[in-house]
Amino acid sequence: MRNEIILIIVGMALVTFATRFGCVALLQQTGMPLWLERWLKHIPTAILTALILPALVLPNGHLALSFDNHYLVAGVVAALAAYKSRNIIATLVLGMGTMLTLRLLSA
Image (cartoon, rainbow, N blue to C red):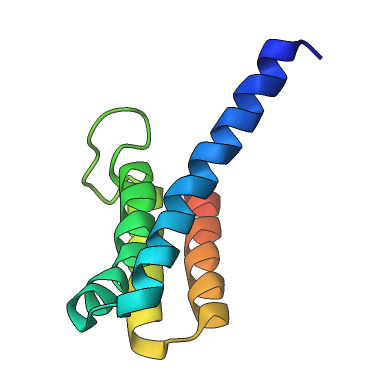
């Protein structure tokens, strides 16, 4: 491997470590404020929404808000199942089952 690549990897590791260690060192002395702790609990939901929503509403690169969009229909069914049951297995089974059913019916 070339030396430049190794230096880039080491540099990236150092920057990542420094940013994470800085937060830990700062918050170790004072503790995490309650408002920050409440705010950070919403980060996973926001990230998953940002990852999943474009795949549901832009399946072919353009906006598709209709029942012909199988991804959107299955996603809505899975979201409702997750909200009602709070069970990951039920959410997966209903979402995947909906997608499979829609694909079989449209073929």
